[in-house]
Amino acid sequence: EVQVVESGGGLVKPGGSLRLSCAASGFTFSSFTMNWVRQAPGRGLEWVASISSTATYTYYADSVKGRFTISRDNAKNSLYLQMNSLRAEDTAVYYCARVDNWNPHYWGQGTLVTVSS
Amino acid sequence: QSALTQPRSVSGSPGQSVTISCTGTSSDIGYYNYVSWYQQHPGKAPKLVIYDVTKRPSGVPDRFSGSKSGNTASLTISGLQAEDEADYYCCSYAGSYSWVFGGGTKLTVL
Image 1 (cartoon, rainbow over the protein chains, first blue to last red):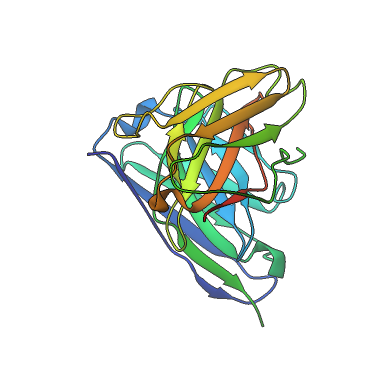
Image 2 (image 1 turned 90 degrees about the horizontal axis):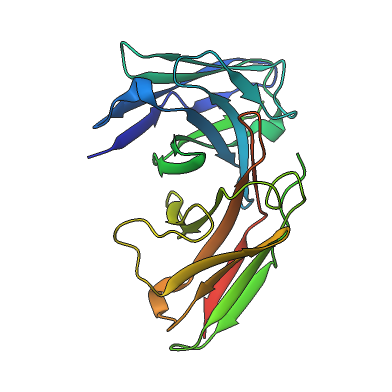
């Protein structure tokens, strides 16, 4: 069974940093592009970042470019999101998703990040 | 990276059909046949119900169907059931490993 499980969320002060992780199982992790998608409280979904299967390509939404870094460790079947210079507007549930043929398919349950003083 | 445009809400009675539209641009929906739709119940993760514009994942009822014309994609749910009440989001690949989502549509089953 395909599973992705996010972790690492929590409460952080504005300007602080946080690293999210996503543990994958049930599939060949190294063969798939992965996404981070977030959802602010009461709001819609927003694509945040993506990384190709071998980490050759990484792309970011304009709203996080220069502050967030997506990475992966295929040996550990893990995806990461390093978030720096956090702002109140980064408060959201962060989901990782496996991309199948350019469609985000399998999603985790998400991890909540709250940026507040 | 502008969001796709969806109606904020739609409604229908049990057994009826509803259609949710999703309008993008010639750079996303109009260019790629990689439109997906997600169902999200309160407090839950999004669930894929349509991918590649028209395809249904295993386990999704055939009451769910998708289509596209030009820069607009649509999700149709026929034979509405109470459990279909949820938020629905469209998504399109936009090239260069980027994606764009719609603002979401709240479906109410009357």
